[in-house]
Length: 400
Image (cartoon, rainbow, N blue to C red; front, side, top):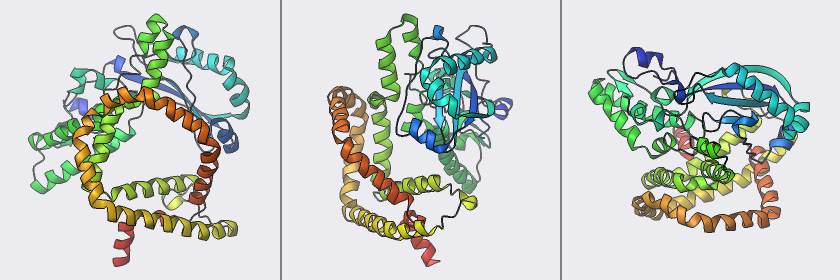
């Protein structure tokens, strides 16, 4: 079952209860058309954080929703505000009126938007979307069942929302994969009972990324900074939730999931790299399924042959290195895996030392690394896409 945060089927079947208003957020989304060249110039290669105290009416109340997000796409821009339906046990908000005030304030008074963005956009649509946001932080809600006879709940329907990133997609992918594996096992065993399907819940609770995603608290705790107007606390929470400081609570789950996969199959490193290159290439050329735009210009084809050679050699060297070093990589990952549970505490001690060094290196090396990164991007985008295909997949196709 993947019906989203409303979970009507899950509620009617008695698996879960309706989420309370203080855990549900409503998003007000403006979809603007904007030339790609302007999007790249204004938003490219940067992340901008914009926070304001509640009384400034720039963004929804801190800690009661995500506030404000501006998402740049290829030829469009999404301006999104979202807010919980209720503050704790208070009255349900009149969000239509509140969102109108927030939108008018930020678009008319914030120089960045008013002067640089507003003259270059055209409103195409306005949308509303509801989703659960802090379900995982409530112990009783977090422990509600996500399975019953013949049914498994995934994603938002199971309360698997990333409480800080406002993004339920990765946790939905993970839970869908687990659900598919358990469902296949149930079909093979001819046993769709709740008792058999309970192993789905066991695997969800053992998944480090899912459990981290639904229990992170930095965004929720923004309300504490609002109470005292403590700007230092606000910056600390922003840094802990969306800056390098996130590694003090995200390092352990990330290392656990990466090392577990690498321990089982070191070649997955190459598959991850190819997957990313393939994804970026398809995004750049708008090649999505059978509707992708063919790239056939003569200038592209001439560059493609050259870049295909460069990438083919690079990826083959990568594959060879992973094959030769695979046993050592596998043993190293297995050795480090038990220690990954200490990664968060280690980063708490090391980050104050590492972060200034990292920022200094970024500043010093940017004149060198920026041209190199642009060259790498051009090699990928001007290449022939078959180069990025998984080597195992290629082998199977050739055998067939």
